Length: 64
Image (cartoon, rainbow, N blue to C red; front, side, top):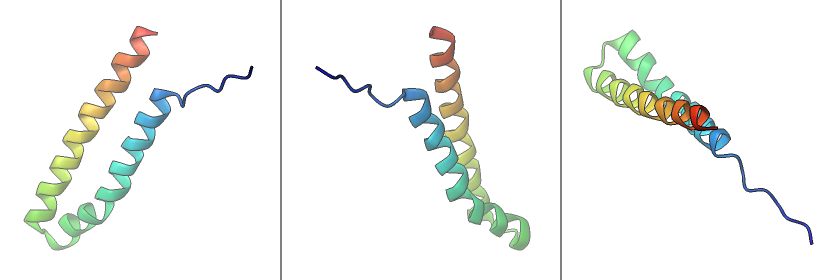
């Protein structure tokens, strides 16, 4: 009987962080180039999501 391992949770979390960065890239450009305040707010929100996600990865790694 063959068992298949579940995807590694750290890999999924890391992929999520990469997606957050990729999705925020356009807003970073809008804020830098056009000083778009709304884009800056979205960048701050994305950076907070990165902070929370990175902390989750750190906690997972420490536990192992």
